[in-house]
Length: 188
Length: 188
DNA sequence: ACCTGAACACCGTTCAAGT
DNA sequence: ACCTGAACACCGTTCAAGT
Image 1 (cartoon, rainbow over the protein chains, first blue to last red):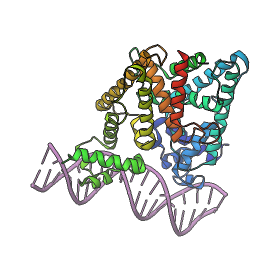
Image 2 (image 1 turned 120 degrees about the horizontal axis):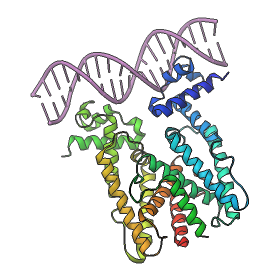
Image 3 (image 1 turned 60 degrees about the horizontal axis):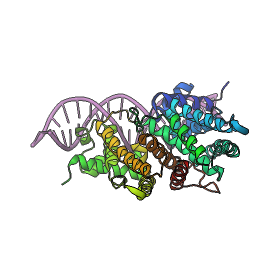
Image 4 (image 1 turned 90 degrees about the vertical axis):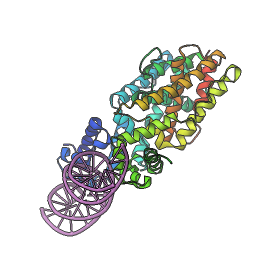
C-alpha cells in the first residue's frame, strides 16, 4: 500500500490539476488521503514543502525525456519529439507546469537533483543532433538552453493567451519549436 | 491628487514587488492607500480583478517597446535592444512578470487590449529587421512570436533556477536572445 | 513514530449602515 | 457615489495530547 506521504502527494497533485495552487488546502489534502488536516506536517514542513515535493516528482517523471538521444540521422527527429513531448505535458497539465517552474524559496535538494537530471538528457540529444550536423556548433549546454527556452516560453505565452491565438500569425508552441529547429538547421 | 483607484493599484504593485501575490492582501492594500480594508470592493470586483489591473498597467507601460522599430541597418540592433529591455524589466520585477503572464480567468478587455498593443510594436520591429535582411523571411507575426518565446522562456527559466546558472553552459537570458538573433541572421 | 482535536491569527468577501 | 465596521467562513500553522 502507498505510504501516507505518497498519498498526500497524490492528493495534492489532483487538487492542483483541478483548481490550481489555491485549491491545494492542507485540509482537503488530508481528507483525500484519509488523515486529519494537520497530519501533513509530520511529513512536510508546510504547504510550500508539500508543493515542492509535487514539483520534484513531476521533474523526475519519465514522460518526456529518457527516450531521448539517438545517434545518426534520426538525432534531429529525436530532439524534436522530445520537445514536443515536453510541450504536450505542459499544455495538458498547466498547473503542474507553472508550479514546477515557479519560484522556489526552499532550496530543495530533491528538486535541484531532478532538474539537473532532466536537463542532462536534453543536452545529450542536442549533442547527438550537432554530431549529425542538424544543429549549429557550439557548447551543447548553451544550444540546449536555447531550445528549452523556446519550448518553455511558447507554452507559457500560449497558456496566458499572449500568443496571438488567432489570425495569420497564429503559431502553436509546437510550431515555434519546429520553426526554431528548422532555422537552426539552416544556420549551420 | 491620484484617485483612490490609482492609489490602490500603486499599493498593490508595491506589495507585489515586496512579497509576491500572497503579500497583496486587501487589508494592507487599503491601509497603504489610506482607506478601509474593503473599500477596494467599490473599485474592483475582488482581489483577482485588482491584480488584473496591476498587470494591465504593466503591459501598458512604455518601458520597453515604443522606441522600437527603426528602418535600415539599425533595425536589427533596435530589435535586439527591445528584447534586452524586456529581459531587464522581467528580471528586475519578477513578481510583476509572473503576474502579467499568469493565467487569467477574468477576460479583462483592458488586459487583452494592452497585450495586443505591446505585441504589435514587436511585430513592427521584426518586420523592419526582415526588410534589412537581418532575419529570415516569413510571417513577421510568427517570427516575432519566436523571438518573444525565447526571451520570455529564458527569463522564466532563469528566475526559477532551471538555466544551469553556473559552469561552461552558463547563459543569461540576454545571451540566449543574442544567440537566437545571431543564428537567425545566419539562417537566411 | 505517527496521528488527532482544539485553538489562534489571518484573509477574502458580504452586509447593514453611514455621508 | 464612496466608504466604514462588524461579521462569516476558510485556511495555514501551532500545541498539547493520545497510541
